[in-house]
Image (cartoon, rainbow, N blue to C red; front, side, top):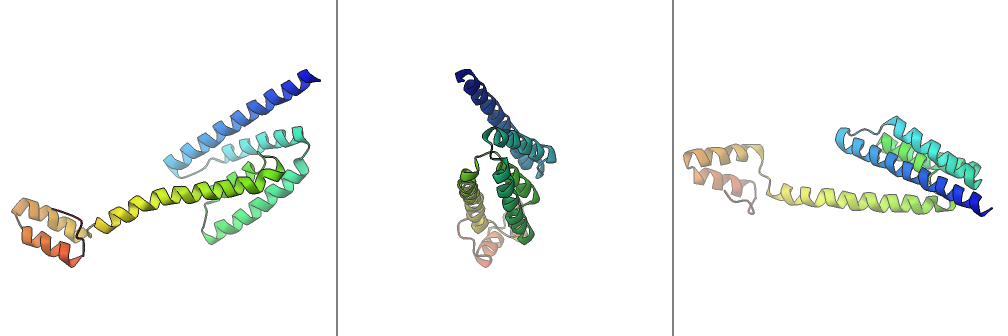
Length: 165
């Protein structure tokens, strides 16, 4: 019996490693092309199905995955998440034991919020100093023709005190 448990543990480890590789592939593709391949979500679903069949919790996982899919689809309909996120969330619900699905969703939500902060902070900081398009043209002209007053007028006009010529 000890050998059977070791084999199952080794299979779980291989499946979870494969799932991590699929998630990495989906992430890289999402960053590069802003799309998530259907094959990655399907592979995650199959990996999760095998994991839940090993545990004997496939029926509960099916109900939870369907629930996650419905709520994620509603969020997609509202414009809060992308369509790829919907299919990945539903597939990832299969990867963890059913009692862990709420924790998984909370962790994904917190990680997404933290990622949004890292995207927004630099954008907000640079947006405060960003000059409108005519001022950028004025900056080029000021450098080329020595029109410091022209550039200064744009900085005062558009309220950008942190930018320097």
